[in-house]
Image 1 (cartoon, one colour):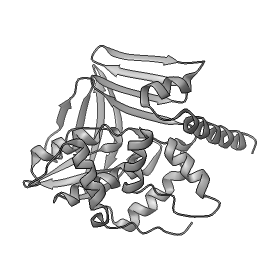
Image 2 (cartoon, rainbow, N blue to C red):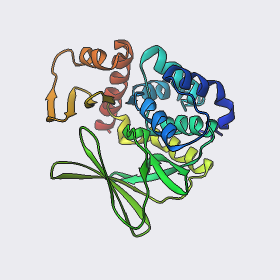
Image 3 (tube, rainbow, N blue to C red):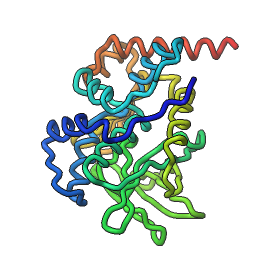
Image 4 (cartoon, helix red, strand yellow):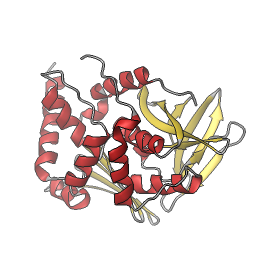
Amino acid sequence: MPEIILLQSSHFREVTASFLEKSGINVTKPDFVKLQTILAAFSKIPYENVSKIIRYNSLISTKQEVFRLPDTLWHDYQRYSLGGTCFSLTYFLQTILENCGYHCYPVSADMKWGKHVHCAIVVCLEGQNWLCDPGYLLHEPLLLDNMERKIYRTETQGVMISYDLNRYNLATFQGNQINWRYSFNDIPCEQSEFVKWWLQSFGEPTMKGICLTRQEKHGMIYVHNNYFREVNAMGIKKRRVEQNWIGNIVDIFGIPADMLQDAYEITRKYRSSNETR
């Protein structure tokens, strides 16, 4: 598949203007309060790989562009309640912030199952660097401090950022349970590298089943096929839905049932083909 050169943020000024208008945001100057407001509005866009699976499956034979750029992502969110995965969400957020006058850049991150499999945005503001992670639907900027550990709390969980051996580590926690999520260097990811890791993401394990996450008013819901996990101030509720689980996803996310069914069938065939090899 040929390398795809991303457009500049200036090409998505109309998309940025539409996002700001729909979100009721007026950015007169790129300050910290407006950054918080933008992230809070952006976190309403769900993390989901349904759109990625369908798009890749429909274009792979013709080797056309597989990336869902900001104009496509924003259109699909408004029409189908779709969102994106970490790379498409990060690039969309980057274009919004840059069009609003913020200085920012993407960083690639390593997780337990691979290197450069996650990404986020670092915003340089008021002499400090702030991590903004739309892939984890974090709706607050997180200060990067290489001298001391930083802890942030939401209604449902805590987020901890520490620094060790020239890398930042991000972990989430609830009560006494701490889960390491990823690590990264605070070094700008060049566009060619970002394109490379984005293309690589189409072959990752995350494409083997449909996965969705959405920030709720008082918590968060995570879905992997028929497995549902809801997190709120009362704790964690896990359940498997054996019948009409796609209907349950439709009720929660609003994504059309035929899209969910198509994506699931694609992943099911993919898993079956790998098992027979």
